[in-house]
Length: 197
Image (cartoon, rainbow, N blue to C red; front, top):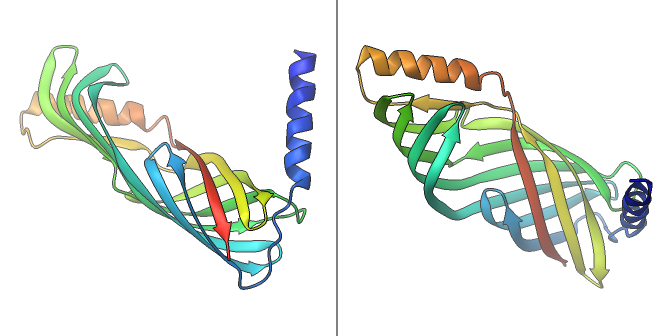
């Protein structure tokens, strides 16, 4: 346990010292992967300690059974979204804290079965445009090239809906949504390789 903590601390310290050389006006582009699918990224350096990024994510589609609270959805999940993020490098090294907006294009749709109540339904973010907060790094690998990563959350809940007007179905949906309100955030994870011009 102590050895694991020491190795983690040493890795974070190493990342902290591998700053990417950033000049005002620098532009970088990159590719990577997030929990919303493959990503394309562009970044503009505003100052030596600040930048603005845009991410386009998608291309991930999964057919499976998905558990939502105590209900099961047998269907398809399509992941995707756009993020506009401001980065701040408080120590002037590779570590950054970031905040911005996430515009969702994510939907899970299929047959919902909640303890015997069965209907066609969808699950989406309650707010299709939601704030996000992350922390991460942008560490130089070689001249012009860097490895970047982010971990954080999007501040919104999931919401179930259905065109089925049956009062029993709508009561079930209301109950599911009440339970989903207890989880006010959705995780975000990303890793990519960038080239700076």
